[in-house]
Image (cartoon, rainbow, N blue to C red; front, side, top):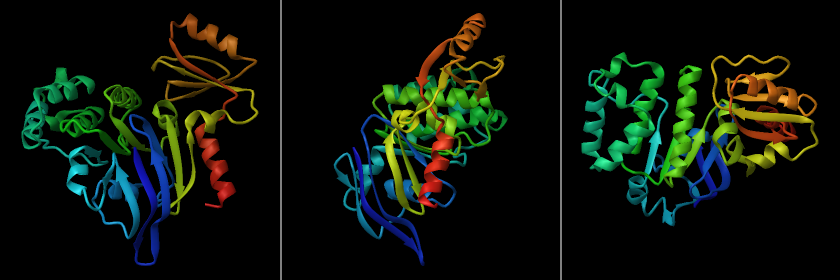
Length: 291
């Protein structure tokens, strides 16, 4: 459990975090949403002990951020937006180097390679990798210390849809390993696909925190959202398709949509009835809160 209580962090006259309180459950995938300047990156920095908070408390698995900073860093990993490896080295050389300086076990190294699908490119020079492959290498390096918590700060910026889908699938695997994931993204469909619970913050304050299902279904609607296995060649009419993995339709058209998916041999992961989408909910909440 991660508990943030009445945390304040100011820069001159700006309150980047303004008496912010929230809780993140262990072994969950937790989404942080907010416009630029909302306080997301400041919060991630505070959770990782990279900045000192002015007041309030942060406890991570019973450890206090002010007293137990070193212990917290040992169980945490933050995956930054920028790439943090040596482009002149091969993928394997990068992984071996970072595994050595982190005293990582062979098991941790093998898991990082497997989950991020790096086996086929281990001997490739890192500078020659595609954008998605570089992101996967960046993430794999963050797994080497066998963290209990991983923080992702916009990990799919600048990657193609197929690579984004692979990254999201790998992040779901971390939960199966017992890892708690905190995830920030501007892509609402990413949050919808992988997160269990979401917090919306604005101007350093918590606007709303709830289970994702409650955010998307707690309203009267005839809309239906269908999550499918990613398919580059998806061809459907009269529906909204997002990232080739989420289809938005209506109850009236649902059975026609399902039949069309079956005809194309496309597997359905999940169907959500009475749904809105996270982007609309976010905009509604922002407007109501005047942020």
